[in-house]
Amino acid sequence: MSAGDAGIPVKRDTSIKRILFLCVANSARSQMAEGLARHILGSRVEVTSAGSEPSQLNPCAVATMKDIGIDISHHHSRSIDDIDTSHIDLVVTLCAEESCPVLPGRIKRLHWPIADPSGSQDRPTPKELAASFAAARDQIRMRTEILAGLLDLPSAPVSREFHGSMRVADLPASTRFYAWLLDTWPREWTHRYATFIRSDLNLNFVLLVSDGKTLHRDTLYHLGIGVADRQSVINVYHQALRFGAPIEKLPRTTWKGTPLHELWLKDPDGNLIEIYARLTDAELAEKPADELPVFLVLGAGPADEN
Image 1 (tube, one colour):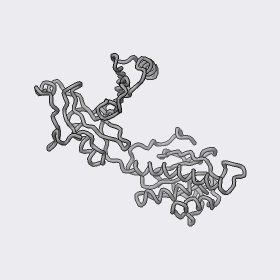
Image 2 (spheres, helix red, strand yellow):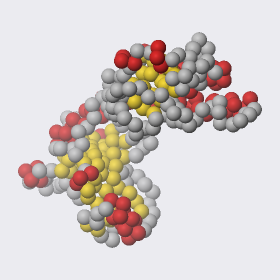
Image 3 (cartoon, rainbow, N blue to C red):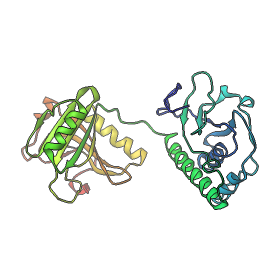
Image 4 (cartoon, rainbow, N blue to C red):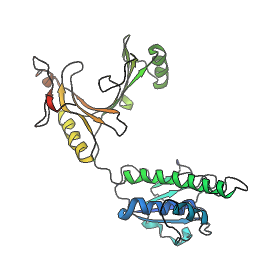
């Protein structure tokens, strides 16, 4: 089975309470996945594993899990026929070279193709076998840690547009490339930038000529999400606080350049994300003579800026 096979896509689903890890023999990969999921996800979900042709628990799987402090020695291989799949919320298949078992009906599923750690070489040495199992374990662990962060996502901003800005060394060459890739001419261009608009993709993409300066928060090298209006920007601010997203700039209305209601967030790697809404004609008419930013939440002001 591949990731594109039939199944209900998993998107912002907080109802996942029972997860089944599925393989052929249920001897190594799915057993490690079960142990890792129990350890990482804790009591949030009920976890089990099974196979279409169950054999027996691989001692190398037990050993590699013991190396990271997780005991699966009490596990045993199960047949998928012994599992009541009607109560499973999500099935995760881990086969790579083999044909994974397929559960009938519409069910939420993920496919994590992990190479069989016991079958990578004809006659592996104990050291090579241990390294192969450790590699498979670590791949499953990272995928499980990602899954853990996705199971309890709070409500997200309702976006209308995605904006990205990229610095390029050769503006004419990059403009030609992205005009081909996005299948459209830029909406406008100067000697400093080219702006691509694809309304069918809700895309606003800007190429900026590289000026050789160190990237920082004022270089306009960032991602952006367009929302409906001023109140939507304020709402995202409160959502970000609840989520724990770092706030780079508090929500405000800016007038210089393109007038916008905006909020700046920072992702875990320090990349900047602008949440913005364009001003209505009535809001544009309220522009102050000094064109200083107008903050949109109580207690905010210039002293609060980073």
